[in-house]
Image (cartoon, rainbow, N blue to C red; front, side):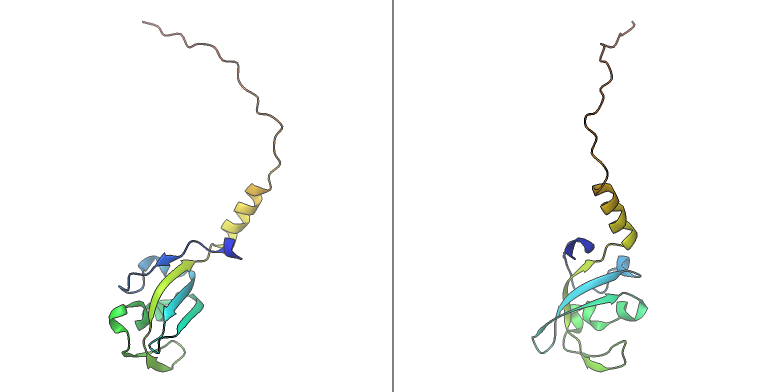
Length: 114
């Protein structure tokens, strides 16, 4: 399953990165209680506005997309799920038949005209 995900990216705590909107990400966070947590979410406008993306909100009250209210944690890192079409293309390329030998074009020195 790890090949379905990009590398882990350390989160700078400055809000939701703009490039994540519309993507599926796995996030790891520290809750206000000190416990570690992780989740897989599709980043929409609600998720992007969650207080957990900004470390300045750590411990403040926030409302979550599910409607619950609680203290904001802080997202420490995330990774982006590779789109299914990209995973299929990679698998296709990896399974292409190997050619026995590449034919080389005959090599002749280039003529330089003056």
